[in-house]
Amino acid sequence: MSLIYEDKILANRPEFISEVKRYSKELGINPNWLMAVMEFESGLNPQAVNSVSGATGLIQFLPSTASGLGTSTWSLAMMGGVEQLYYVYKYLEPHKAKIKNYTDLYLAVFFPLAIGKPRDYVLMTSSQSAFTIANQNPIFDLDKNGVIEKKEIEKVMMDRIPANWKMSFSRVRWVYYLIMILAIIAFIWLVYKILT
Image (cartoon, rainbow, N blue to C red; front, side, top):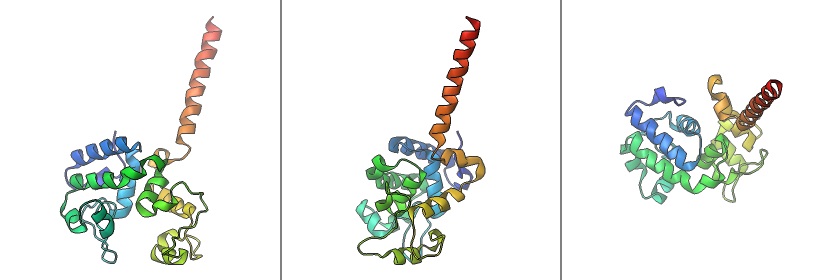
């Protein structure tokens, strides 16, 4: 099975893809979700560095986050993608039980407090106002009202997914599969009834 954006992996592609699939399985998530989050954050470049915040790597680890994982942003920047995926997994693992969809996975990286909150949840903390967060992340303030709601993040992230990959990211994907399975069962039952 190919993964979204796999053509953007410039080094050790087969091993990188294998590790993405392995860690995704351990996290209970779709590997395409992880690929899309890393592509959004870093363009799948493990050496990507934000010159303002110092965030580094595949999911843009902040210096404090890297330290909490027992490493540093400097060390992360020196790693290849395959090696850095371990730290991506290590960071996401505590959020594993809360991640139910692609948006939850992105929020685990960007703003973990919002995981599981209603779609109209406004991003803010006791130390950062909604306005400050919106000002620092204008890509998500779609209505330019100075606050970011969870549904705005969901829209931005879903709009970035190419059309031919959308089903893999849809919140209603499992409902679709269930309906298809039930339709097949009903068809088999009908054929059975006609033949007997």
